[in-house]
Length: 288
Ligand code: GUN
Image (cartoon, rainbow, N blue to C red; front, side, top):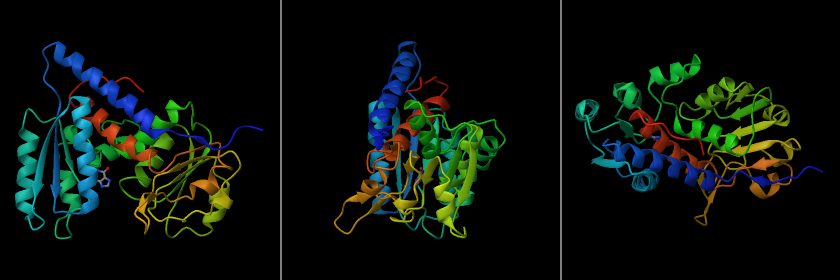
């Protein structure tokens, strides 16, 4: 019988990808170029966002990317935030701009995202970048979906022609991931909160990607024998440990391949941000 429960090792692939970014940056600097610059904007003091941002800043150090961290108070006004984005758009030393989401409720995420120069939108959330992904002309691509595609490719998994089911239809993960999979030639189903009979969709998935942020949303008994399972959810259990949307221990014996949480998709998101920043600076990064 074919082996089951093989690990899609995001930590390892992410390390290789960051190493490739560091090589590209070092080469560029050897030829007299400047290090890429990433501006990270954090509004307020959401503890989860603080952790994500500090991971991103640390990855910049490893990749040789200069990070400039802008911490803004929770109560900052829309005009002030947009003025900062305008200044970063004009700054010749800044190649990438990332505004950590979610923003406080009084700020309009759509307006903020759309204000970033699409050529510096290393999150890939600008409507122009999402539109280009939708019409098969990708430019800067959202980090988590692109990271999932890189993780699959690094393990020799090609979604082309297979049935991929994406559970969750968020703007930052589910929707762009469906577009990535479509671009890669998969037959794609997107399930979401209004989907009737989630079970039957999951049972037919050869590649199952779950991005809801709710542990247990998919019953492991639904997973088809030999499916590839990508768990993009991340939640904190009452005991403080992190867990995904899928019960790993129950799903692994059914899955051919599966991502752990932590150590699966999470590190790929951060490494892909480094890749996008280097590419926004005009560098060429080797696939891991
Ligand atoms: N919040 C959760 N995920 C992300 C992400 O990938 N980028 C940004 N900017 N904010 C997020």
